[in-house]
Image (spheres, rainbow, N blue to C red):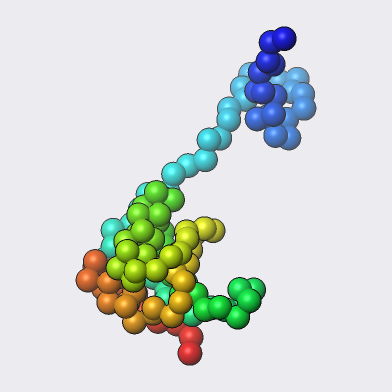
Length: 117
């Protein structure tokens, strides 16, 4: 048995076109250019909603590629010595490490500020 091509799955929403000049192109998503650290405006906040009462420090507002965000998340996790993750354009660091993260980001040249209580 041969496997069929899955090209038809990539054609979301296009059923049929009668236009002679129609060309279907697949949008592979565009990679957003990463702003330099001096132009980033990051917000650091403490959150414990939907986390069984456990606190996490969130870093929001990063503008750039997913790879650069993951690299920044790895740096912050290493400097704080804790676990965390990068998802939905946010960096989650386990525990309350707002002050330490603020210092690390400012040393790296980022514009960052603490938000919330």
